[in-house]
Image (cartoon, one colour):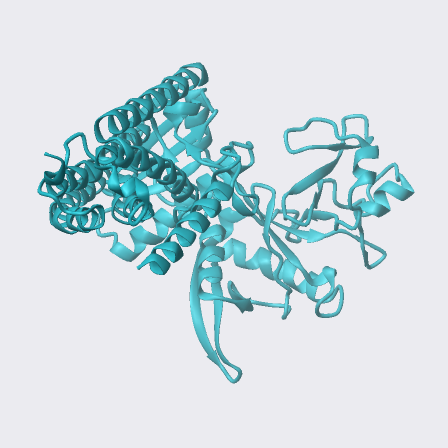
Length: 517
């Protein structure tokens, strides 16, 4: 028994050390990820909930695809504004939840969600048949574009496919570099970064019409059977005018260079972000085509969604079903009060346990420290990027701290009864834990059921974050409390069995055993 208890203690200490490594520092996560996510009510920001509007007769599959497209479109727009860890999710009842931490201008947030994205197609600029790179413009410092027939902007994208700079011609005919919002970009800064970036220019038909998302009729993920096996691909279809423009571009690119060269690539850009650059394999497509590659099913589904997400696939009901703005100052006050409440609660619980239950109470308080580390570690490691901690979620966590010692109270009361009738400490410990287990199990199962109901109901209401946050943090806290009460506290108590302290019954109960009466 002693060896088994020692092994259990070692495992507990290792788990505690790992939890501390995950938790600290509190504002940083593991593997370079962010720390514990704080909800809008704690950091400030905008909270919007939109109702999607589908036409009559829309199938469940059409609704699913359009909802996925809408999420990707909104995510793409928000990412460009540098909003830290936005939350864009589907909710029950065909609703879309958008939370923007730190973005406190509610009207600007609504414009950001409701605007129309821009899907365009670009080709690589050529100079005497060779592709033009950013380095060519920086080293040669030309006074005009290499391809003087194209007056549109040159777009240079980095390794992450996001725009690095635009090369534009101002009113005076001079070339200058700007960022996405039109602000000047320093040439020396561009030279310090990677300059092996292709120069992308608008892809146009013979009459100068640029190829954009307005000409794309459909993009559908599919799996085709080929001699080499099944292959995931995206089937695209143009409207009549778009098919003609696309064929004119395809013929020009097909004849501009060998397969695999930049000259043959047709860049697909959504809001200036390069989402794909397929090679042109034939001079004519007659309004249809497929984008192939070593794609997975998930990748072609995402690509098809992006191709169709130049605009939101369905209208969103305006105004939003729910909108709220929380100031960062108010959120900071909430955090301070929450920390204070949690600290006061822990101290009072520990004092009560130590004064009333003596040494077992001290051990239960020590187990409470283990409990806190494990719960916070689970908050960081929870699937889906961690638990988003709202004010209600902190309330659930603080409540679970009190419930964490609830099981110990049942166990210690049973131990007192066993010590009163004259049992040894070892026998009293085992009897206390074994006989209190059924009550602990049943009470916690009922709590789990309530948490599940709250979480499910939270998914079906507009202002869902507080309800779901409370349910999730309480569920995690109660689950961990069962482990700390049944395993940790029991293991610590067993360390005293067979020692001299075990003979001093007064350390384990305010009542003396039968042998001392």
